Image (tube, rainbow, N blue to C red; front, side, top):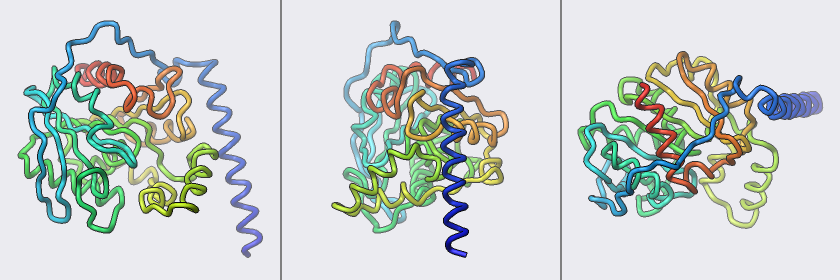
Length: 276
C-alpha cells in the first residue's frame, strides 16, 4: 500500500507541475485571461514617513506590537509575511496613510510581538480579529502579503462578518502548490536551523472549495507573474471565492510589488478599493 501511495504521490506531483508550467506559458499567450496588469507608480502622493502610533496591545494569548499611520476615514490593516515584521510593509503604509488609517500589525512569534508557543493561520487570524475588536474598528479593509494574505483569507472564511474587504497577495491554498524549488530550500534551511514558522509553511494551509466558498466579502486575489506558488493555485483560490477579482502583476516575483515596493502596493490597493 505504501508503494502504491508513493506512486500516486509522484503522479500527483507531476500533474501539478505540468498544469503549473502550462499556466505559466498560457499567461504569456493570453494575459487578459489572467488579468495581467502593470502598476503605474508615476503619480503618487507624498509618503507619511513615520507612524503616529508605535505601541503594544494585550490580546487573549499575545502581546501584539502594532503601528498606526495616517487619519483616513476607513481603517486598513496591513499584515506582513512569514518571518517579517512591521518594517516589512513600512513603505506601503507610508503611502496608504494618505487614503486610510493604516494599522500595521505584527503577528504572534514575529518581531516584537510575544510568542505564546503555538502558531497557525487560524490562530493568527484569531489574533487579528481580537485586535480589530479591541481597537473598535468597523469593517476594516485587510491587505496581507504571503502569510499575511493567508491570514486575510482565513479571517474572511472563519469570521465573515469582520472584514469590509480583503486583498490577498501571494497566497497558496496548500503547501503542495508551491513551485518545487521553494519548499526544497525551506526544508534544507530547517535541517540546519529548525523553525516553527517554516514548519507551518510546509504543512499548512489545506483549503478546499468549501472552505474558500465561505468568503462573502469583496476579495482581490493577487500574485506575481513569477511567484513561488503555481498560477493554477491562484486561479483556484479566485474561482472558489464567489465574486472575487484576480490580478497577476506583470514581471513581479513573490515580494517585489509588496514588501519590496510600497509604491506598487499603494496603487494596487487604492485602485481596487476605490472601485469597490
